[in-house]
Image 1: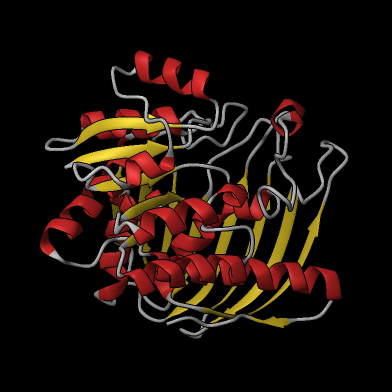
Image 2: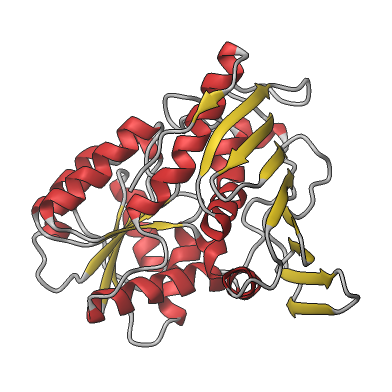
Length: 339
């Protein structure tokens, strides 16, 4: 299958490596707003430089498009691609807030265009193993959930134009970094129903949105949970999910799943790896992106369901939206439900 990449920012090279490493997939070209940068990027990666989004949309050879622009630069592009019937794989988040995100999902649905979001932590071996264990009832009833994202970003990260602003990104640590861990918890356990939250800026950074967030939440499955996410935890560590069940406790972190059963048994799945939690935000493997891209290609060929549909990604954005409302009001907020 032939793929076009739109958006040549920080994560673009990861997508290129992912596509080039995938059998039966081919990067047919790229496009960015800066024509000189597009030409240079295309030359470095031995591919075509498209002249416009419309050229991509009108090219019958392109099977789907990877959209990796900032969230505020997507709506017009999505409308052009959807009108042309081009399936879209989009970087997270879908948009800056849940209403704008739902609009993009609706545009694609009305056009009959498949939409997938790059929530690559769902594709990791340890995450898949935990999903299987939960579905098999190995942990019993889940009583509590603890989510931790102790990341670090230097001020230079937020000095980049638009980063950490509501206008471009839609927020700070929650929508740009911790969205992965929160989405993974929802994918594993089901919807969050309500949330209490604080979202703040620490003295370690200058940015418009939050670099620290804390939350308490209730889930539809009956579990209750805690979340702590920050980019102000030097030198940065791996994000973790801990689940306490009536039969076992599970700990997921650094690509490793450890399950300790109340009867004394233990299991371990996965291998340790970096996740971009330190000063270098790109210090992670392209293999997780590759898994999502290959899964999308498979779904397009077979007509099956992809791993991370646009509609499923609305759930995590709805929780982040509720966290922002809870932080501003000081009151518990209900989470908008989708599906």
